[in-house]
Image (cartoon, rainbow, N blue to C red; front, side):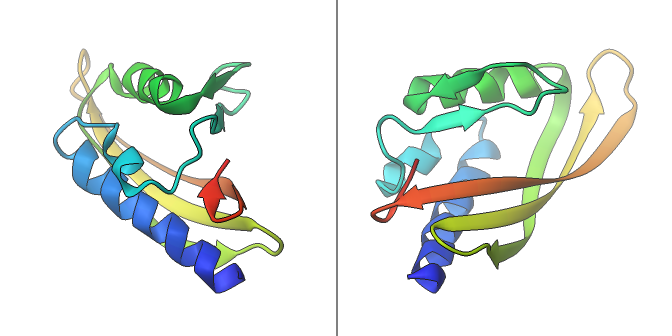
Length: 119
């Protein structure tokens, strides 16, 4: 089941990356691989809250990227992290809207799956 989970996450990420290029943060949901009640937990340095479902995720992404031009995030590696978890390592690049300063950030996201869907 672990490799299957990696492939589910890969499918979601690929759809997200393609959609994000157009500013369409809902594209990942077209895969059907995210549970309707999926919860996105923002890291503490950004915000102490979570976002639920498609609308919550889109709100989070819009807030996260609103101060950037040319924002993109590419997955660099996916790792099977055991029972129903996959870790994705990303590189994010963008340019500050107000400053014009290019920025880069490496980060990881832990994806949890239940019965083949992202939760």
